[in-house]
Amino acid sequence: MNLEAFLLPEEMDHMPDMFVVGTQESGGSRSEWEVRLQATIGPSHVLFTSAIFGVLHLTIFLRRDLLWFCSVPEEATYSLRPGIAYKTKGGVGIGFQFFGTRILFINSHLTAHEEKQALRIQNFRNITRSLDLPRLLPHKHKHKDVTHRYDSVFWLGDLNFRLAVNRDHVFERLKKAGPETYQHLLQWDQLSQARHKVKPSVNLRKAQLPLLQHSSMTLVLTIMTHLPSSVFHHILTGYCLRVIEELLHAIAMIPAHCSKHQTISLS
Image (tube, rainbow, N blue to C red; front, side, top):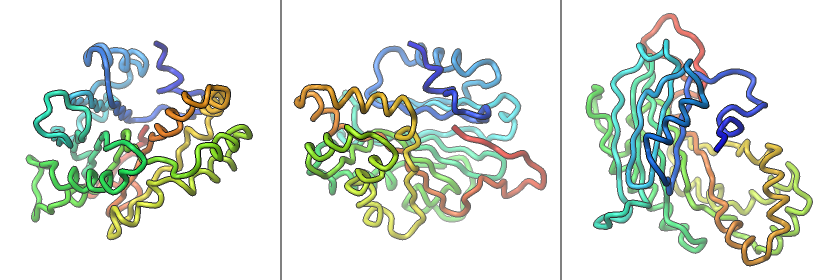
């Protein structure tokens, strides 16, 4: 019930200008969730926009005084299971212009199971080619890939890429949990292995999984090593949390049409 450790960890040295929260298999009331997020973040930020698609939810909170520098936000969705009323797999995107920089956030839930890596990569391609964004912002040429229509793209969610290695090996390594253990295990990370297949033509980078170096994550992994093997197996194969940061034209969010601006921080 307490979200402070999640949104405002002790290690945070400054208050971000923007909070972007994406959830999958979301339960409960959408409004209740957004109210809880707002209450945790505090009055310095406001709910800029949110989008929902089945059980996928994407919310953006922005510092109050920065609202005037944003375009009207636009959203789009894509289902990986068309025809099914209960939407669990797919993507939801929100795009807008912040100062002079076009930013796109995509929250997705891709196909599960270790052996379906090729299908997950196809999921990625389907989403990038199906999100109809932007619709209001002017553009000279509408590229078939939505990630080419924005300056900065942040992809988050339950991507379902797994550790393609023997479970017992992971089990043993986690007994000595530490930064070197995580780096060792990530060599079998399917997402890292597949990056060159997904987007070979652009600078697609995966975040360095800061949660793995957080004390709370170490605690979670320590607890996991004491679980029954059957339970631990499901947790291990569900090792899916990822954040992909794709910077197409610039690493920093530098306004293209402003001569004076402040540094913007993102959480």
